[in-house]
Length: 484
Figure (tube, rainbow, N blue to C red):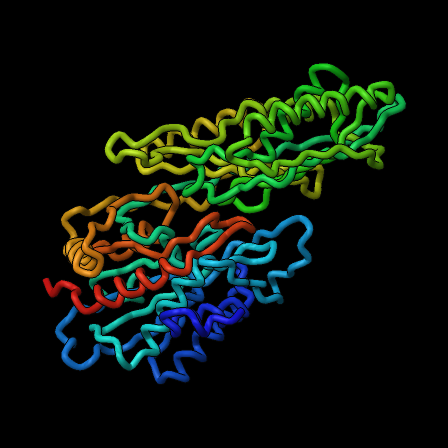
């Protein structure tokens, strides 16, 4: 991808380099090596902690030594989602990015602008001999997308800065000062297999081409959930015929709304044509429901091979659970208009070895008591259905600080640059800021970024004009960090 004509050239050059480096969550070795080599090349101090986080330090430029140290923070990993037809290997292939008018997109995969563009901005600042700023600590965290494990185990002595600017937001012209906390709830169903004696028609039914999206930032859009749609069709069949389930799969990542799901099932052979008619009627219903949010929705049914099935009692409990479990917005904020307060995401369902079926969900809320409530509600539902339940990767929210000096300076800088007020918001998605604040309670923090659309999906795209505006704001703010 040729970015030589884009401004500012430095940030686009580094972003293009980052696109060439595989960096799935938990497999950040190549981007870590790249960052450490960057520090050596530019004669900057770098260190890596036991968790894999990288900190590169740049001293203040002449005349700005009096400014407090600022931490610029982004995460190294990216969400690895692709279309069903894509052969992309995220472990070794570069991102097939291209420019489409004012947007940068990828062919059939996530782009990784979340948070590759944040990394690029840090590197452009660290490499520059022209920008003016106080001392900078550039923090690159590991494994943000799959549990924020990098900041979870980061030592409380790793950083020295007074202020932190998180570069992981996705709308230029907005500054975020708070985020939701979250927790993951995993249910496991155990089953037995049976070989029915009657003659059966085995079929594979799949849901695809939904838009998906981020389970926090996009949950309010009410996009279709592939697992929910699949469960609804199978439940209709269960109530009309004797339905057998052989396998069921759907979704991928905990923090993504599932775009695809499929099941291999069986009915008595004489119902072979009936279920196709039922599917056509069902597709018409769903197309009407998701016409606005998921216009490319697709659902297919094909014959399949099969012999053994899940025992009927378990498959019934499984479908009843998938029908009953909530997905989407649970409640809106009472304090900030248009902000989702509490939500839950039915993220994935997978068959595991040992005759087990796992259902993965995640809950979020900006109110800790509500987070605990929705986690408990989901857990109780699973347990009533006979599943075992585990929890993990809980993280705290980030409570807004409207009296922050950093926030005041950011608002002033934006107004001076663009003669308009920057929007001050909180986000329903989880940011690393909450976990960092637990370890460094003295920090004042804001989060900002350029405009990125459809993150965590193959439709992810980066709005080119927003990058220049964001960059200009960021470098201006670094010159006006409050001393007190």
